[in-house]
Image (cartoon, rainbow over all chains, first blue to last red; front, side):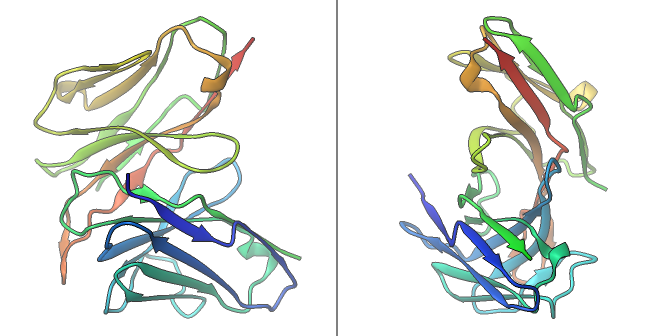
Length: 117
Length: 120
């Protein structure tokens, strides 16, 4: 089956650090990847839609300068949390699906737990 | 606007009991897809089922069954003879087929989730 690998699984770092999270589709090409954020005991909220070779589309209220998204290839998208602060601590999870196949389930990575001290 | 409502925040049952998780959705699209995902304590999302808006047939997969009713905009999920391993947060989700520059975005809109605790 389709596998999405997300790295790292856990990150603990100091306030002010920039953190990069990678999302890779291992056995399929993903023209579109999605980035979600989940606070404890809350639902998944879509942050942005990442399209290969073009700028990401951010959801309302998500700071694009804070959460930099790059989707340089059909198998890799990265999310960089710039100058992270404690309020950015959350569970970040990516998913991938070939665009247009909205009847197919998104394949999710295992998520990244980010803790900012 | 699209919206998914899971009114049950937490459910606790004893092993072997049947349990139904409710999901109500709102959408103006005529074509849409509904999903259920399971999120165990480890955090990963496990895909359970998808259903398109034109297929109202109920589905059964082992101890899991789903009841899709367009008339009430509901897509409920039943676990029969629950087991401790079923303990998790379950999310219902709606996929809209919105079109923007570059093609359909296919965003997933999640409900708030239902925490199911199955006691031994």
